[in-house]
Amino acid sequence: MTLRLAVLATPILLLLLDAQAALAIEVNEEYRPQDEFKLDPWIDLPGPLDINKAVFYLLIATALTVGTFMYVANRMQARPNRIQTAVETAYVAMRDNIAGGNMDRKMAAKWFPFIATLFLFIWFSNIIGYLPLPTNTEHKVDVFGVEVPSLALYAATANLSVPLVLTLIVWIAYHIEGFRAKGVGGFYKGLVPSGVQGPAKVPIFFIELISDFVRLVSLSVRLFANILAGHLLILFMGGGLVVLLNLAAVGSVILGLITLPLAVAFFLFEIGLVATLQAFIFSTLTAIYLGGAVAKEH
Amino acid sequence: MATVATSATAYVLGFVQGGGAAKEESSTFLVSPDLGLMLWTLLSFVTALFILRKYAFPKITEALDKRQHAIEDSIDTATRTKAEADELLAEYRERLKEARVQAEEIVTRARTAGASAERESAEAAKAKGEELMEQARKDIEAETRRAIGEIRSEVADLTVAATEKVTRKTLTAEDQKRLVDEALGELDFTALSGERR
Image 1 (cartoon, helix red, strand yellow):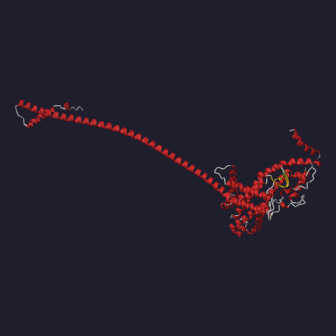
Image 2: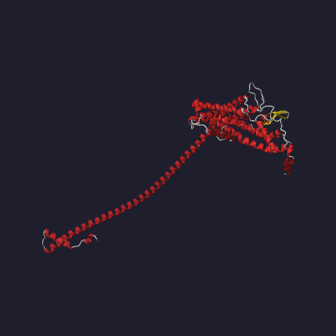
Image 3: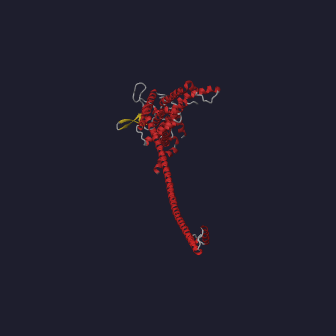
C-alpha cells in the first residue's frame, strides 16, 4: 500500500516541484497518428482492386455476416440454444422494429433482407474494428523469427468510401421505389410537405430537394465520423497523446496515468454502444427513407 | 497543465483539418473516397445480401414461422382439449344428476307402488270381508224370513186346526186369513229375525 502510494505520489511531487520542466512540450513531428488509417496495398490486383487493410476488414465483416447467419439458419432448432436465441432476437428486432416499424407491411417484407444485411454488415464492420488484429504492416513484431504485423485497431467503416457506397445504394434504392410508386414527377412533388400552401411551395421544394441530396452526406458521414472519432479517441487516450506531445518524462507519466483509464472508458463506450447504435441508426434511416419514398403523405 | 491542453487542442484541430503539424504528407486520404475500396464494399455487400437473402433469411423465417404455428397449435389444442374436458365433465355431472333424479324417482315410485299395493290389498281384503259379511247377513235374513214364513204358515195352520177343533166349524178362506193376520199381528217376530238395530 505504502509502495503504491509512493509510486503514484512521486511524479506528482516532481510536477509540483518544477512544473515548467515537467511539462516542457516538444511536439513529436515524426509521429503521424493519422497513418493508422492509411491504406497501403497489401496485394496488387489489376485495376483499383488492390487488397489493403480496409478490404481485409470488409472481407472479414462479410464472412462473419454471412457465416453467422448461414450457420444458424442451417441449424434452426425448435428449442433454440443461446446463439440461436441471440440471432433470432436480432432477426426479430430487424424485422419488426427496424423494417416493420418504419414501412408498411408490403415494403417491409420486400426490403427486410436489404435492411437486415445493411445492419449486420455495418455492425460486424464496426465490432471487428475494436478487436486488435495483426494489421499494422508499418510496425512489425518478431515472433520466433517471423515478422508479424503488430496488433492494431482499425475499422472499414472509419473510411469514408465504405459508408459512402452503402449510402449511394440506399439513396438510389429509395429513389427507384419512390419513382415506381408515384412516378418521377409525383415523387418530387411529394417532397413538399402536404401542409404547405401557395407560393411558399417553391422555396420549400428547393430546400427539400437540397435536403434529399444532403442525405447522401449526412448518412455516410454520420457513420464514418462516429467510428473514426471513436478510434482516434481510443488511439490518443491509449498512448497516442503521450507520444505526440512528447512531454518530459514526469509529464508523460502523469498524462499517461490520466489518459489510460479514459482509453478504457472510451473503448467500452465505443464497443458497447456506438458500434451497435450507428448500425441501428443507419439501417433505421434507410427504412425511414424507403418508407417515406412510397408513403402517400410526406 | 493549461499549456498542455491548449497545445493538444491546437494540434488535434490541425490534425483533423488535415494540415497543421503534419506538413510533409497530406492527410486527405481520410476523407477522400477510394475507388478500389468502394468497389470492394459494393462487391462484399451485394454478395452478403445475395447469400443471406437466398439461403439464410428464408430458413430463419420458415423456422420462426413454424415455431409460431407450433405454439399457436399447442395453444389451440390445449384450449380445445380443455373445452372438451369441460364439456365431458359437464356431461358427466348432468348424467350424474339425472341418475340421481332417476334413482330418487324409482325409490319414490317404488314407495308409492308399495303404499298403493298395501292400500289396495287392505281395501280388497276389507271389501272381501264386507262382502262376506253382507252375504252372511243376507243368508241369515233370507233364512230368518223363510223360517218366519214357515213358522207363520205353521202357526196359521195350527191356529186354523185349533179353531176348527174349538168351534167345530169350517172357516171360509176369508175368515181364515183375517184370523191369521190378526193373530200374527199380535205376535212379535223381531226376536227371531236377529236384527238388533
